[in-house]
Image 1: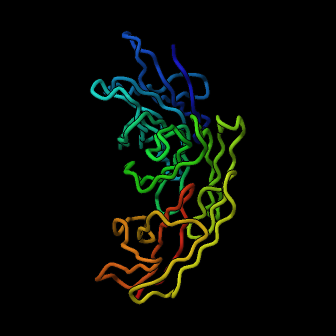
Image 2: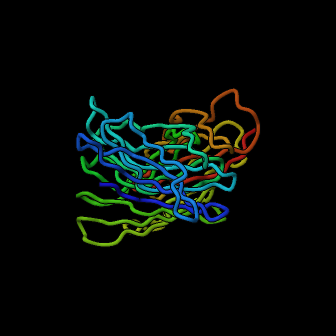
Image 3: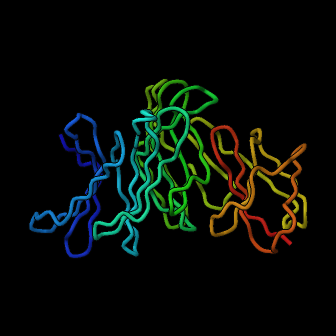
Length: 277
């Protein structure tokens, strides 16, 4: 049994397909393939170094680089992890990464974000609820996870599709099992200050003073679970900043410039641009 799960069109009429293929032992392996306009198979690249895996969707960059997301398990760890592949249009796997996390997880769709980062949706294991929830994770070009956010209620909730626009907004759709309803939300707004989901109101956020000399205060409608600092290329500069009563301080020394604060709250991640120095 073979399954085609994602497809992108290339110049000249060629297409790339990603999916799963059943092996002789009954397990499945991810693959991606290229097909010409006359239906000739140009190449077929299996990802066979796993116990069980599958490619769910595929994204084509303007420079010809292709990113694939899916799921992957090993004989030592039979629970699925999110699978990330960076490949080219010639049949070469440039980067391959699995995002290890407790519980079973899978990436169902992928989209480009500013700063050479990528957003993946699917389902992930939320330790807070002990359930599989809608997952929104941000990874870099090597598939290393930068941040993750869970959405949903009790029960197994799934994110199926993720899309980004020219302004850097990211929209995600899926299914909420407990409420038997469609999930549709703005889950990421680049450097803006609001996240809206189907189960939470628009959250207000304020960071002051800004520009920041050394320390600053954050006020938010929702309890803050953690704050991290990124540069404008998407590189995380620190672990969680230490805060007391909403007051935080930048690490020292820090090069003057523009940075992003990643502010985690239950059900979302808020982003705020700050000027340091």
